[in-house]
Image (cartoon, rainbow, N blue to C red; front, side, top):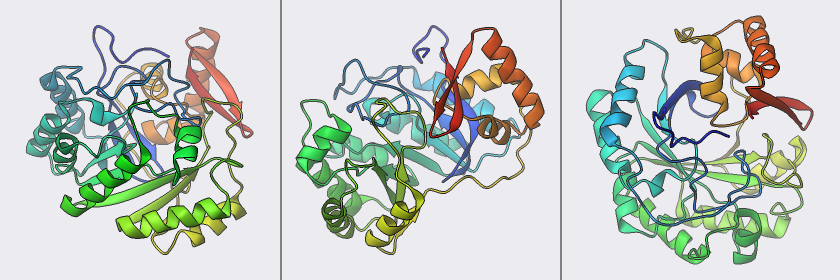
Length: 314
């Protein structure tokens, strides 16, 4: 996939149709696949290396300029979400960028994070500026943490969980824990019970249960069926919900060229034709035609995962 660190990087993408966040304006402040983990289920593919070093990868003013333009476009934006090419807290300008967004709009700011750097006071300070923080919790034991998340060698699960607890104590916004389940790996009843103990101790506002719905880094990473997901959701307690399909709502059609808009969304994650149509407010037949053209031109490819066709750049 293309690198987000090209000469003229696009920091903003979407708004995309999110199952959890409505129409979400994505902000990507990392070079491609810059992460502390190499998760087996990652929709961006495997990592060549991991890192725990925080850096100022890009000029915060350039990021804020693109956010300002997107907010002024008139497109529907329900949340502004830090996501994209890796772990957002690795960018040490994160707090500065959030502060800048807060000065220009009242749209809620969300940070999707794997939570591995929450033991660091500087990371917690940056994240406290957000309205919603969504940390991952896929493993309750070091063995499964290593097997599912494949962390950088500097990371330990106990420090991660201590950081999550410390962040909960000092954060005034909402915490939504995301639990990603891989069939036959971290879905055993005994492990689910251990996850429940951690969830109860943290006191998150929501627990969002997910599974491998997009093409993963490792082909062996498989999704759970609906009945098993529902059973585990009940076992994880009353705050747990399953990340359901995005309801179809009306989006203001994007003013940008259709093929260019498709590439901007697809370069961050594999997407379906219906994802694209909902995100861009475009007619499904128009999207299908544009996708066929892009595939024919060799600019994107398609893959099947769990019987569903996804599109991603070559």
